Image 1 (cartoon, rainbow, N blue to C red):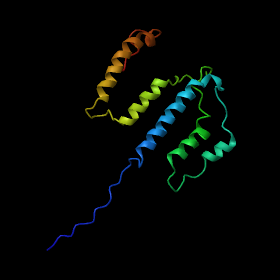
Image 2 (cartoon, rainbow, N blue to C red; image 1 turned 90 degrees about the vertical axis):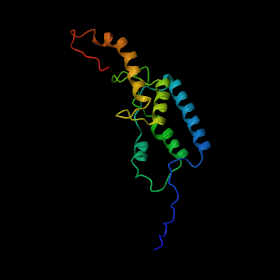
Image 3 (cartoon, rainbow, N blue to C red; image 1 turned 180 degrees about the vertical axis):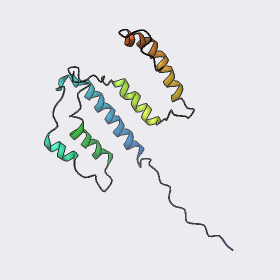
Image 4 (tube, one colour; image 1 turned 120 degrees about the vertical axis):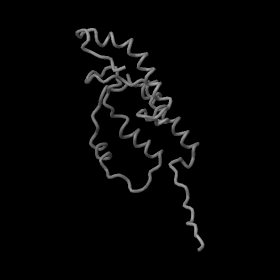
Length: 156
């Protein structure tokens, strides 16, 4: 009996069709976000979201693929102008820390690696431990100064 091979299906991939276009968009995004952070003092600490933007953000999800450039344009138009405000130096509404350019870049690096530190042996696990060892001896005395001795434990 002769075996008939199934036709090969084309390989599916999430890779971009045009790596150069993705690189150009990424560079533009980085430049725009650096400018956004640089100009934070010139903007109000917070501003309400206009009804027209709320309506635009409440539209049904598109049924067809959207270009990355179009999605980024919508982000710039409808999302970026209306942050919580916590990166602004005059924002004192909540205590949540502020974003910094280097922290944003670190998040970019971590997101591109997409590591999971739950059980694999990769470079992210010892890096996390090293950061903790470096930070905790510095931070623990400051964080525990106002509490009774022994009542606060370091997670490191």
